[in-house]
Amino acid sequence: MTAPVGVRPRERSARVEVSDDGVLLREVCRHPLVLEIDGDYVWSFTPARDGRPHRRGCLVPWPPALRPFLNGSGVAAVRDAAGDSVWFEGEVVLGDGAGRIVVADRQGHPLCVDKVGHLARAFAATGSPVRDEILAGTQRALRDLRETCGVEAYLNYGALLGAVRDGAMIAHDSDTDVCYLSRHGSPADIIRESYAIQRALRALGWRTLRMSGGDVKLLLPLSDGRVCHIDVFVAFRVAGVFYQLGNRSGSLPESAVLPVSTVTLHGYDFPAPADPEAMLAFVYGPGWRVPDPSFRYADPPAGIRRLDGWLRGFRTDMGRWTEFHEGPQGRAVPRKGSDFARWVHAQLPPGDAVADLGAGTGRDAFFFAARHRPVRAYDFSRGARARIQSRLRDGPERVEVRGLILNELRSVLVTGAELAREPHHLYARQLLGCLDGAAHENLWQLARMALRNGESLFLEFSARVPGQRLPDPAPAGLVRRLDPDVVRRELAEAGGDVLLEELGPADDLLGRPDPMVCRMRVTWPRRPARRPDEREDR
Image (tube, rainbow, N blue to C red):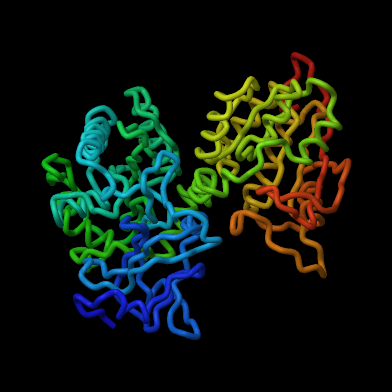
């Protein structure tokens, strides 16, 4: 169904509703639609793909990243992607209706949902001077990759699409992406090369963020106060298949990639694949010439499994946690220490150090620091670490802030070695329910390494009790309930001894009542001291 051009909003609003549940259409639409609030682009969707059957038509639910902002009133508009046909336009009231709906970051910059479901600032909301900073920064990144790192790097993804299709950035895009073609065919060599490239870029003054074994973000500070991300993705071949992060795989001849050509974007020249149109068809499919702000990648499952196993396994939910900490829910987390922190503090000798794993907003790290304990706060979310660093500037407490990715063995082993030399008790409140099975194993590995001298691991997690229906813990979709019996078996298999266990009501991560949580104090057997001449393997 296509809306006729020029239809007045009141004639179409009878067919579309905007509510707390999402956007309801009386009939299924197979074309991309755009949602604006108070004139700002917020989200694009294709109802036939993104919606679900509803007794009155087709309901397209709100994206999880957008829901925390949908409280208040505002003028919502639903249009086709070209902006010619208006499906709905009118005042809407969502949540409790208090105030205006504002989808923006802390600095007031408008945000929108990008193609992978994250909130970002679109280029449509970026002025020309800042846009030029992004283009110049991307030029510099490609020059450094090619000249200093010695790899065949080229512009790709949305920036390449905008350059080829319009010579301009895509209005709903939010970052720039570059790729380089690795000559290695072994995942270990590809990862080693990626880390060498990251070290070289840091030596050139770049701030970097490691996202996977073949994906590094360059953090480009802009004059408007925000930081633009330039993704540096690896591309390579294994057994005749062309792989390119993120998640692309299939058939693409090398002649489509090298030697590089040149494309122009807003007057700036960039190295590009040898055949840009072939690359765009590989990335976006044969319909790449037709604008679709609701586009989603349809990657081969077999390729995704291989890339996850080779390079990408540890970044699950990283973006969603960063959005949580930067959004309204994260700001609603209480600042004072939790009841679990008080429970742990009462069991520890004065002055014993604490390592807060999955520290989040740092509320408990600051609780321990205020009681004169040395504290390290670990989290894999850059947004969480930024929250803690910001609070450090406001108070007298001292907390070391460090990154830890429990799905990455390299990160676990480095942290475990550091804590083995500088003993800390390990504190993990509501961390366990955020982790998959592999990260559980790595957490027990970390504890085995760090707790060599009788220190303890303190766990609190939302518990599942057989025969009881309990609500999901908050934040929804990021934390799950665990069976204490299963956790106890995991600990026993890892060599841990549960010294104390309690089951009962407490609070969730948002400070709301949780009817059932489990608390454990766990130790690992002390290791006897070795003689100076005694080898580890004796």
